[in-house]
Each structure stands twice: as C-alpha cells, then as structure tokens.
Image (cartoon, rainbow, N blue to C red; front, side, top):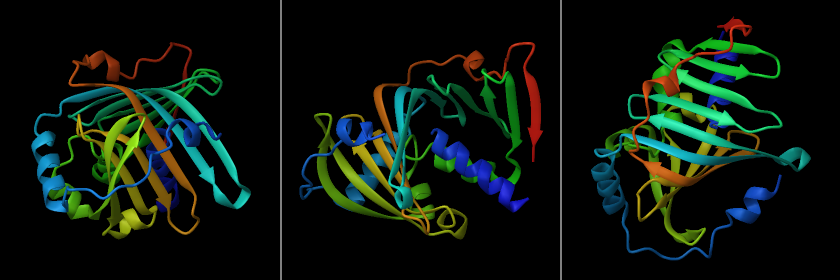
Length: 236
C-alpha cells in the first residue's frame, strides 16, 4: 500500500506537473538581495490572502542524472484556492491530470482509459505540493520547510527571488531533499519550481508562463466528465 501511494503522490506532483527548459528558462546571474527572509515571508503572507485562482502554460522537464536524460512536456494548468486542479498535457503524450475531492484522475485519450486514485490520508500533503507557492501562507511554509533566501535573479526578463526550501517532515524528505522556488517580484507567484529527488540527484523543473491570476474558473473545468466509451480503472 505504501509503495503504491508513494507512486501516486510523486506522479501527481511531477505531472503538474529535453534541454528546452535549460535554454528557455535560464536564470541570469545571481545577485545579493535587499529582501530578508522575514520580509519575503511577510509579503507572501499578504499575497496569499488575495489568491483565488491561476491559469497558466506549464513546461515540465525531468532530468535523470544517472543516464543523463532529459524529457520535456508542456500543457495548461488551472487551479483554484479550494484545492481543485486540472492539467491538460499536450501531444504526443497528451493526458489529463485532475485532482478533485479525494480523487486523482489520470485520463489517457489514446487508450480511452481513466485511472482513478484514492488519495485518502495523503490528500492534505499532496495539496501542499501541488499548490506550493500559490496562496501558501508563511505559517504553512515554515511548518513544512526551512526557507532560505538565495538572492535575486531574472527569468525571461522578470525579476525574481529564489527561495530554497528544505523539508522538515519525513513524509516530504522521503520524496524530495530540497525544493527551489523562483518568485516573481511583480506578482508574487512562482515562475518556476525545481524539485530535487532524495537519494538520486534527479530533479524536475516546472515553469509557468502566460499566468492569469484570479480569473474566474467555472466548476465545469474540474468535472471528471470523460467520453462514454472511457474505461475506468480504480487504483488504491
């Protein structure tokens, strides 16, 4: 059971989830910042209160160090403060990843199949991963991580702060040794996240572009409505 849940948890996060990213999202030189940890957390706390939703284009790049392999996929993400999220991944391996209630849905149109995972007791922690930096309060951040400012830089001509998060809890450390969060100083939303897997050095980077904050997203966007011929497979 634990192994299966671990696979579901990691998949959902990383699906959120080549060298394209290294070219397009290369950060500028790191510079010292006038922002202190306290001032960053205070600003994040203020901004968290106004966050309601996000729509953005995403680009996910997974690096497997031991075989020097990079894989990239792109798509669109919709998320709402009430912990609903949908990702539409583009061809050639197009899929839909939907989190609603206590269920993770992974729909594969090519196979005409949707897998439904019961998140159970892992739902709260999964939500913290999926929505990390999007409406996250300072209290929640400090409860789960030791945050350390890493200075200022630029990504795609946007001035950003880099925050390194070191997990405090075993249920996070078992998956990730550290997380880097690049925060846009104009919107105070993440423009990029990098998750370093524990024990392997492998890492996944998720970049957000064309972000629209607090644009209304209808409930229908998060409805698990699949074509009639879709096969449903329930996973534990």
